[in-house]
Length: 175
Image (cartoon, rainbow, N blue to C red; front, top):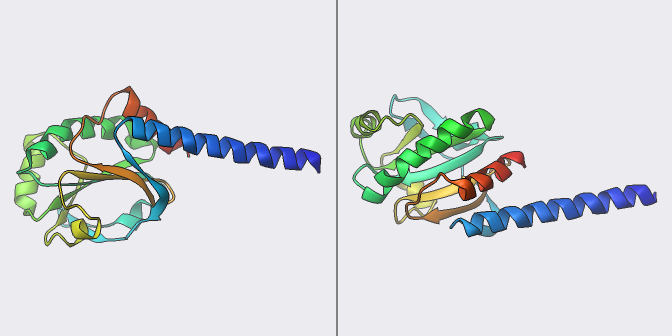
C-alpha cells in the first residue's frame, strides 16, 4: 500500500515538474502558454489541391497551426524556419497546418512552389476559421498537443528554429 502511494505521488510530482518545465521553456522562447489548455475547435478546409482536411484528422499529433497570407511580409519571413521544423520533426508526430487567409488556391500554390515550401497549406477562403481562432493579426500561431488541446501560441513572426524553441517542441512531442 505504501509503495503504491509513493509511486502515485512520484508520478504526480514528475508530471507537474514536466508541465512546469515545458511552460517555462515555451515562455522563455516567446510563446504564450494558456493557464488551462483549450479544446480545439474543429474545422474542415481544402488544401491547394482540393483535398479536404479536418483539424481532428490530426488527433494524436502535435500540430503547429499557423494563420498567414502570402502578401504578409512577417508571414513570409518565418516560413523557411517553419519548413525546417517540418523537415526535422515530421517523422516524430509533428505537423504544420498553415491556414492561408482569403487567397486563392493558385496564389497560395504559386507562393509555396516559388519558396520551396511543402508543408500542408489549407485555404480559409472567407476567413471564418481565422476568426474562430482569433487570428486578427498575422501571422498567428497555435501549438496543439497530442490530446487536441491548444496549449499556447503567439502573434507575430519569429525564427522557429534554434535550441530553445526546438527544446519546447521536443518536450511537447514526448508528452
